[in-house]
Amino acid sequence: MKYIYIFFVTIAFTLGGNACAQSLSLERLEQDFLSSNYLLIAAKYNIAEAQANVVQKKLWPNPSFSVGEVNLWANANSESLPPLLGKYGRHQQVSLELEQLLETAGKRSKRVTVAKLQQQMALTEFEALVRELKKELRQTYYHALILRRNQKQLDQVFKLFEQLTSQYAEQARLQNVSHADYQRVQAELINLKGERATLEADITLTLHTLRTLTQREDIIIEGLEDGKVFESPRARLPDGIENQALESNIRLLQRQIDVEIAEGELTLEKANAKPDVTLQLGYDRGGSIMQDFIGLGLSMDLPIFNRNKGNILSAKQNVSTNRANQASAKWELRSNLRKNQEQLSSYENILSGIPPTSTDELQATVEKYKNHLLRQQITLIEFVDFIQALRDANLTILTVWENYNNTFEELQYLVGNDF
Image 1 (tube, rainbow, N blue to C red):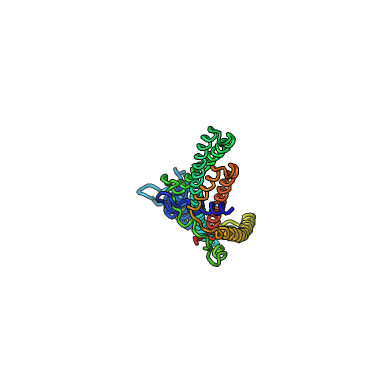
Image 2 (image 1 turned 90 degrees about the vertical axis):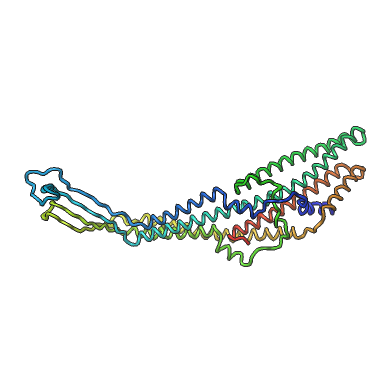
């Protein structure tokens, strides 16, 4: 049991020590992600569209101009009028009308307010996309580092069983070991080949995700820096984390803007219940008792049958729905914060309880058990079980490290800031 403990601790902390020179840090990948990711570029156009919508909502409605009552000929009873141009126009009648809609109850300013809130929502959606993809990038990066360390450990074990298979084949030929033992070693080697294939497929998929997020095609598993991913996991959480989350959590901010938009739309619907006024300026030539008549007019709807009650009621329901969604999001945020803090503390306790060891000690332990096997001081089954226990322990500690880093990133995402 002592050797198992030493082995998995060593694998988790030191197997990456002899890797080739690293070239890509997490910070560098994040820079490429922010500058080149096509989803972010597309989201920026949504912000520009929302800004243009604000500009449009600020504009007044265009006036309307109409020409009417133009006669193409004159009848016998037509009166004679002063000519318009030369001798033309003695019997020409025409009317001109200019109309301008004047919105009441501040409808235009209320639409501008809603449009500005929608613009703010577009900005928060962009920020949410950045945070979501950045979290995915970081967690994928951590997973890639875990896979690389697991790959190195698996390669060592694979080489060990390749040597044992060759030795057992020779010993079985000399009848120094049973053919069943040789088949057992060979079967273990086949299982390791299958695990290597599965691991390589996972590495390929993980690298594909990193390349897609950063738009870089030169990312390889050996070129990733460990950075501070496997450092001592002492608490790095700021004080007052819940208050920070209530102020900065992007989902909570979006629910707040939803409420404000719904309230703005309710205010607008109430304003729509008040009729607008249309001012009219008309000119009439030869159509009344005056040869040239200029008159003013005003028109408006009478709110008798339609007072916009249905739309107002619908807007009120929308406000209530969004307030309920906001309360639900706030409760869910607090719950997720507590859950992730408890999980992070649990992982920290596990990782802080692991004593350091060395690669030389690990290699000496494996070599010792190998020699015991070759001298037949232990059985093949005992040796295979020992190696499998070491590998299981290694996978366990790597999984705890990955879960710790993923949980830490989840907390940063919930709070809305990097700690």
